[in-house]
Image (cartoon, helix red, strand yellow):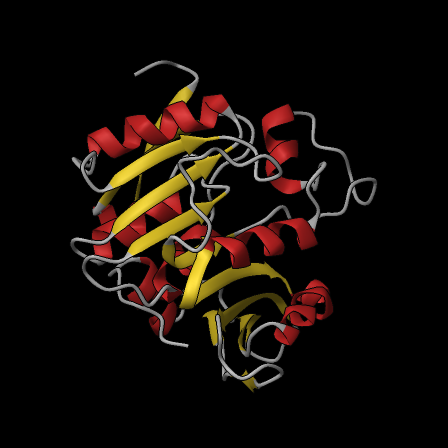
Length: 245
């Protein structure tokens, strides 16, 4: 194993993940995102901004026979995703597609996916501290494609009746909810600890559901007061169970 890479594990060891030793590294967000996608066997799923492939790998491991297109802008991360896919023997079910969502390659057909998932960059350019690593900056800070561009793309890629699932910062919920004009939504807050404000939310749209409809789910508390994961979080993060919205 090269010195600038680490070989890590997700879902209690069920998934092998190669990632850079320095720069952007996977936390729990992609694992939670993948757990929310209501895919079934045979469904086609698009992971937008797949990075090193964490969400795609977790979904493919949980849902047998689903197929995932992992769409990534950065060639270095795309190469690591392919390495991880091979290490998990999932080459036949996950395909890495390189490209920019503002100029998507022909391989990604409009309305071709049963489900689309994304964890877009959370920060607006020019706000907050700058990341020293360029790969980390691209993962965390919006570039040419802003949040509305990401959402437009996700909605275009999903078929009618399909789902779009996005994990993002809670303080940008108003921007996310503007897309309820296109389809109804479920909002699932992620509480860091009981009694604290939610810092993350998962929003899921059903394309074609009655416009403007909204359901605020109970959400999930991630940590106990001592910092350990709650039992409900452990079932998702370690045991690989689905998170039903």
